[in-house]
Image (tube, rainbow, N blue to C red; front, side, top):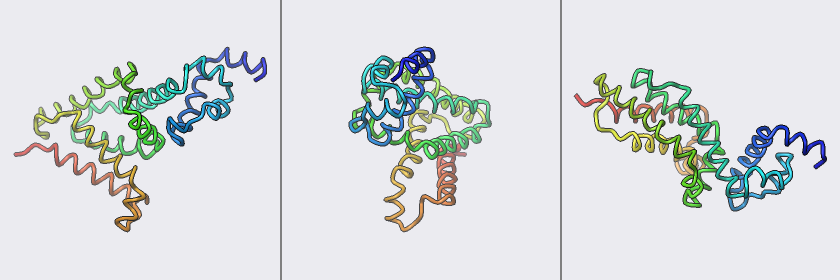
Length: 214
């Protein structure tokens, strides 16, 4: 790396961090934590390994930072919807759709989650940032459920954590197993029409569960 490039990196540390995170996200998503190589990340980011270690410490710390950045991006997209201000059924419909669309638009996120789970989520457990994101998100879902109960459209007593795990699972399992499921059932589950049907099915299933029993 030339002296000019080093000065440019020093003058723009945020830009350098973003390039490293972008390159690392692709590397970890493609190869997992175990198979990822810092050499490839630094080359893709256009930054030498010394600077990469300066910003992120080591490969494990970098993987944790990538997870934090992805969770932050996902939570920001959810907060931007202001779902608590929506009619409760519409809010749930949008939450299911948003979750589905996020996994579709960011398949690398599922790969990162797979790798994180292989390592028993130790990087997530060690992250204060991810923990701080958790409570506002669950609080938002809880408020949507309370709004629905108060409006007489949702049954009481639904655990917001269990609800979201179910919503995420409905999306995650389908997309992470879409090739095997397509082969087993003889359907093209990757087509646009199939994915639209799946999204509508999930929305209907979740709303049916939440509906107030007369």
